[in-house]
Image (cartoon, rainbow, N blue to C red):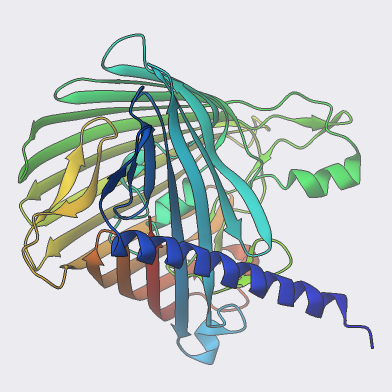
Length: 446
């Protein structure tokens, strides 16, 4: 008897995730079990929390494996009026990231990584870096990250205190792309700038449009970003952090001479359920949504500040997006969002601050034998209404707890109280919706 293709596909996806998860867990467990440094006549292998190899005869030739596995369970609670059919609860493997980084000479290095999301395998950060111009600069070319805009987007998923990024970061994030990234850093400041041709994302649906209109005969659009960081004080337990970011992206494009000059902004409610196969589609609605906007280009501006006193870390940021619409008679529209959050490490310690990237990373200084325990709280808001655009607005209150048994394991729980004023397209006769969201996640990194 022949099996249904969908059943076969689901079995294959489950097997892929199971094998990927077993591989990631086995690497971490085995590396921690034999943690240490091993040498032979030609090489040195460091197996503490991962795998790092370099050659004795030339320590500029090296490579290291890295990865991140995230397992989620999200529960959406609320009345039938508020939930409707938009927010089914679900559990599953959130994502599996696998990659390798290494050095290939005096001033050359590389990163190659992929994300396994649902039934899709997506190329992630993959670029070559040259650092020979000066001791405090580098330039990278390849598929580079486009998220160096604001505090939250510039922070690593490994160490951000919540399961989801804040609302404006989700709504306004404009993806990675092929291009060039330059960095410079000093004792108290740093600059990161990029110019790229970004991936096609939710803002334009180019695949659907190309099926309708034919082949894309126009050049790829451009995006440029810049972030300036200033930290007048950044000692082990005392940090003052300030930064400003800007992004410009053109949206004008044509397919067989037909204009599809559109962009789109929308956000999830503070939690996401499982990925629905085939493809990378979240089983969670986005009720705050501008819809497709006819536009030529847009600007995003961000201001941020953070302060760390030992185990206490607080920060806030503000987003402003200016969209230059294709029809001059309609005028430009502006969307906004902001966020304030704080975290406290109950077991003592601090997040290590990196002036080069302008972010807070790994927790150090915890004296507890059971690892580090961190409490966190956040209030965030995004507004996608302006003039004749009624995309809705949303505000969330989030509290969370994180337990880090060691540098490679993390267990997290979040509670989100979401107030959603849906956009016109998702209103369905309900002006305001309230959701209570419980999210749980286990992460393994190496």
